[in-house]
Image (cartoon, rainbow, N blue to C red):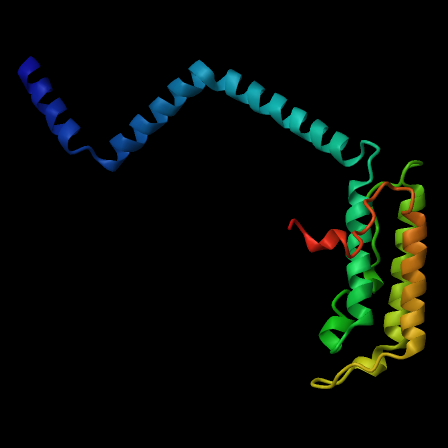
Length: 179
């Protein structure tokens, strides 16, 4: 009898069926879960809470990272609109959706309000002067009034962000690099 059991065991070990493989996998997973499951779940839960806490602190810690990114993005959009050579550059950004942050607090209220006003004004400018830049292969002939309005929006942004501590642009002597 014992010899017969060993013979069958060797046969099953060499050529297991799909059901046996599934049962063995389930048993191994259950053993691992019983031994380490609580530790794995509690560690994952703690690390997730820590990660989310760090992310919230990083986003809303009092610095203006989000607003600085939006400022740079709007500034680039204005420069592209001023120098647009076709509709793709004039309409590269859809200003209609606006530029809203998830949270406005006392420390970033000035920046957020300026960003929102700028996006609203840029949407109006884009719609008002859209007909000067609608051709498929034509160059944009942006009127001087549009460029003045874009410059006005840019100066409002620069005024609001003047105390944000950004680095001033290099002058020509500094841009030459190391010699």
